[in-house]
Length: 338
Ligand code: KG4
Ligand code: ZN
Image (cartoon, rainbow, N blue to C red; front, side, top):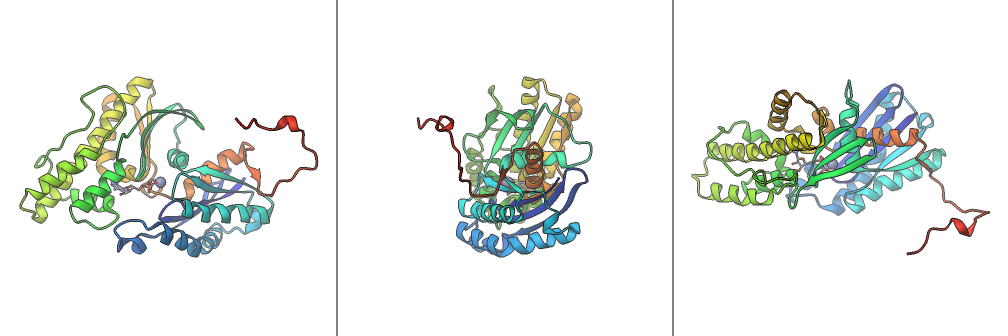
């Protein structure tokens, strides 16, 4: 089955073609970073309009890369949420319309399930059960994955998501949007141990997170410092160390609690090098396996949506993209109103 995947939930237009036999055939991404940079964050209306401009050319580019034409597609998967509603509607409308025109099924994919399944796009994919750490701009969750589509939340952030904490902290220190990757790059030049920040909520049991207090600690340390370039890098290093160690501590706890031997990591912060190092250390020490997607599939992309959608479409879960009216319709089939 050959499935076109469309991702337009935020500031990245992602398109991919996934083949359930041959694997990933093509993927293309257009990032709106330059568009939003001057505003210091994503402007939803501008994001929607840019998806409209870029989506169709990207679909063409992707099909050309895969040496396929529209008539080769067997299904369409698009991100149906969570995300910016205007941006989501662009992908959903285009995906549904395309599926309707081609008379093939379409399916709305959960963006976080897309992220969660991204590590399975790599060679030797792990099999459930496993623990998933989802760390993006909007989510920080530990999930008990018993099977594909069988997800139980083990813990989540009570305030800022990990990516959000990176972005806000970067902004406080005068770094450009998007802050996370900039802060991570700067932290690479910082000296470990010059600044030490707390590891929130690691001193008590449980698998929830809280990152909003960290940015205040960082702001105070930064304001009271000499504000030199080296100090900025040292503060960034201390912040990154605190976040990544906290995430690693909770992952270890989640593995102990569930008894699972595999951890998968996904979402934008999963691209962070220090987080990968901490988790690899923990995996060696605890003799568990840790799996990451390649960095470009940690952040938003069409491949994860094509893949997640293909699994469900292949299981017969798609709906034909048509307007449904029924000549025969038993009233007993209706769902109760309340
Ligand atoms: O998964 P994603 O692309 O979009 C959402 O679904 O939110 O994640 C974006 C988040 C942003 O907050 C970004 O700053 C963060 O991931 N991020 C990073 C790195 N690369 C992206 N944070 C820390 N280190 C990185 N290398
Ligand atoms: Zn995402």
